[in-house]
Image 1 (spheres, one colour):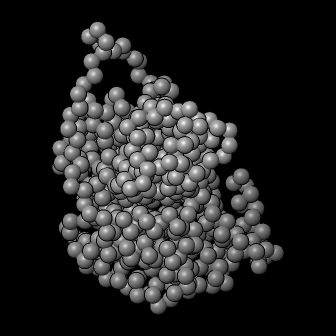
Image 2 (spheres, rainbow, N blue to C red; image 1 turned 45 degrees about the horizontal axis):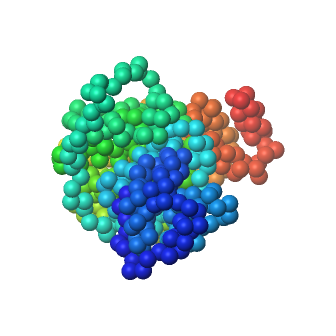
Image 3 (cartoon, one colour; image 1 turned 30 degrees about the vertical axis):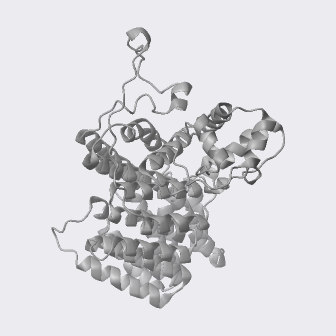
Length: 488
């Protein structure tokens, strides 16, 4: 773990508590590492690390809170990081750190994967925090590119007495192996172009499953893949060019893990995945993809009604991507800003952003080199964005027109997107007083939602049902409720 620059004054508070607890420097480091393992973190501190802390250096990330917990358990009284003379990283911000180096980024994100792949249900209950958006987006925007991501080959461990290690049958790692993470597997692995191609192919598979069946369908399988396949590659050996491509592929998979978490309403966890995907994208040297991650964060902020933050994230993405970004990328960046303005009810700003998005997409000529992750932003998606914006601005006739166009253009494989757009159309029809048609559309969407593992899809339907309350005694509404009850 990288430490912050040393302070000038020794940490006497920490020294006094070490003496009171009867710890040696090595003993304290060992206990911090053990507690870190309980939280899915591979810290690897030693007595030298403790010596640095005593001299005034500040450990990064969540380590101050872990050190405080070690002393709390030992001394039987509650101690905070401040009691130890350390800067506290509140637990709510754990995982939201924008790492100083690629190595630290790998440590943070792999700890997140390992904890999420286990039976730690509390991780999926962490709350979203809008305050946690500021620092990562700022650090991405103003941060310098990583000069080096290559990893040289490490010395190979030779088993005792020259004997080869015992062979194990294939299967999930035991608990000891999980605690060690990939320390024994990673250094010996030379990453190839085929490895990276495999990561991208797996990403396409999971994206297809997400689109068709919802984020909850294969999310855990994706996280386990990241832990058991992607992490060993990141801890393997590779040159600069291969390393950049590897970090790019890891960023895409990590963003997808966040997206699927968002779809099942694990919003705090999703936020952490997005921040780490942003940092991996920086290690890849891919500013355009970093902007796309920020747009994803903006969309989550829109969904959670944080309109101001959504607009800010979209604008940071635009600034970071620059005017040289492909037209399709510029279109999706402006559309994201429009969604934020719509949530805030800012009609003129929303309209202006939509116009910029439309012009940018019109400027994308056939054969233009657009990133593969941006190709899904087409006329169908732009119409969907228009429909959502006009719905939020209560401009229901325009919302209906654009939602209908999106449904006409959207491929059947994008089942969840079509479902959400159908609910937008139902809401627009309801706003226009077309109750029968609105209920019919919403009933179809409700039936489709039961076939998916998507909290977001269910919430769209519930939002429509709340809008039905003024009409609850109408025959069309009673018929709607009967149809939906039959799906249960």
